[in-house]
Amino acid sequence: MSPKKQSTAARKARAAAREGAKYTEALRSASPDPDAPDWDDLVVSALSAVVAKHGVVPVTVIWNEDARHSMVQRDNGVRWGVAEPAADGVVIREVRNDVGVVAKGTRVPVPHRLADGRVEVASLWPVVWCSNDEPFWRYVHNGWSVEQPGSFPAALDPMCPSPDLPYEVRVYSVPDGIAGEDHTGGAPSWWTRAWCDRLDKAVLLADTAVAHRLSAPERPAGGDCGNVCAEVFEHSTSDLGTLPRRVHRADAHPDRPAVPHRPSDTWPKGRPASTEPTPEPTWFQGEKHPPTYDLRVWSEADGWMTLGWIVGGRGSAGIAAALLRVGTGGPFPFAETWGPRHPDAWNYDWTQEGRELMDRHPDEPYAESTVRYDEKRRQETADLAAALAARSGGALTTEQAAARIEAGGQKYRDFLRVGQICIMDALNEKRLAAEGDERLRMREALDALENHHQVDDWVSELTAAHMASDPRDGHYTAGARRWRRRALQEYLSPGRDVDGVDGLTA
Image 1: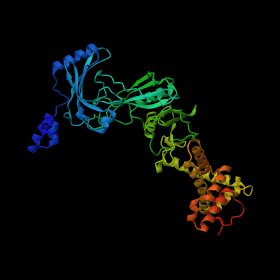
Image 2: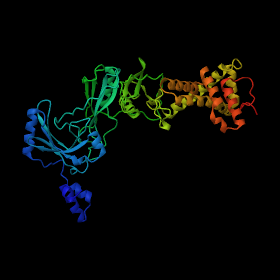
Image 3: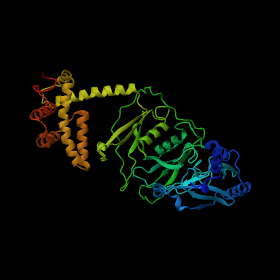
Image 4: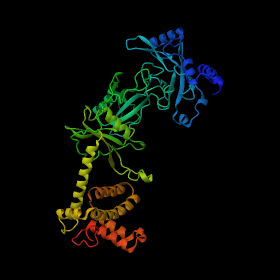
C-alpha cells in the first residue's frame, strides 16, 4: 500500500517508529479510542432523526470494481465495505477486504430504534459485507443490518431438497470477535442447519440452537456472538416456486450458559443398541448437495427416531447433538450420527453404498468401547461357529464348530479368513463393474459375509466361477493355489476331514 493510501494512524505510527518507538504500540496509541469516539454531533442527531421517523436508513454504495481482486470474490459475490454515517443516511465505500481498511479501534455511530420507539446510538466497527447469497449489507461487528439497524438482515431462501422434508431450520451466527479487527474471514451469516419432516422436530432444533453456547466467548464482539437467532420456515413441497413462510423464531439470551460437558471417563449406562439406519428421503431431481447426514435420537417412549437431516456433514451433526445436550440434561439421553457409506473413497470413488454409523453421542469412554468391542468379538465367534455348522451338511454341530475354532486358534481363524477373502474378491470384482441396484446387492452380500459370515448359494456359484477364471491365479505357485482352494472349501463346506487345514493339522 502506497503512503498516500495509508490511514492517518498508520502514517503517524511509521513516523514514531522512525524515531525508535515500536510500530504496533504507536499504531495502537494513534488509533481513536472507542470509548471516546470523535463523532460529529450534527450528523449523529440528523441520522437519529431519520431512524426515529422511518426505522430504516437510506444507503448509498460507492462501488469499486478494482476491489474485487480475488477469484472467491468474483465467484460468490463477496463484497466488503466501510460504512460512513451522513446526515441523511449511510455511505458505503467498497474496499478490497476486511483487513487494514480502517485503523483498529475505529467506531462509527449507528442509531437504531427500540421496540418502544426510542432511539439509541450504538458504537460499531465500520466494516460491512454482503454476498450473492446474502445480498444485504450488514455490520460485521454484531450482524446488524445497515438498512435496518437493530435487526438482522434476511437471506435468500434455499431450495427445499426433498418432498419429505418441508421444514427448514435456519440459524444466524455471529463470530466470536470482529472480522477485520480481531481476525479475518468469518462474518455474520445465515446458515441452514437442518431439514425436518415435522414441525415439532424443527422447533426443538431451533430452540436448542440458541438456548446455550458451545463455549464461553474468548473475544466478545462488543455484543452477543454465536447463534443469536434461529428460525423455522415451512417450504412448499408441491410448488418450488412458492416462497417459504416463517412459522417459528427463537432469539438467544445474551447471558445464556455454555452447554454442560460430561467428564470423558464417565460411562453413560443404558446406551441402547443401534437399529437399522433410516432410509434417505427422496431427493428432488437435480439436487446436487442433499443433507445426507441424519441425527437420530433415542428416548424410552419412542425409541430411535431421526430428528433431522443435518446440513454441513458429520461435524454439524455433532454440534447439533451438543446443543441438544444429549446425555447432559437434554431431552434425549442418547443419539447417533449416520451418514452415507463410501467404501471406495480411498480410491477416489465416491459411489454411495448404503449408510453407516458415524458417531455416538455422548462420546464413548474407553471402558464402554472396550466392553462393546469384546462383545463384538464374542458375537463374531458365535456367528462364525453357527455359519460353519450350517454349511457343514450335518458334519458339525454349532458346539463342535466352536470347539474347532477354539482348538485351531489364530492360525485356523487366519486360514478361514483366506477362504473368506476369496469370496470377497469375487464379489468386489462384480461390484466394481456394476451400477445401481446390482452394485448395492453386491454390497449387501459383502456386509452379510463380513459381519455375519453368511454366504448365499448364488454367492458360492459366483465365487466358483471367479476362482476358475481369475487371471491372478497365474501369479501363484501350484501349492499356493491348492492352499487357497482348501481354505475356501473349509470356509464354505467344512467336514470332518481336517487334512491340510492350518491350525488343525501338524
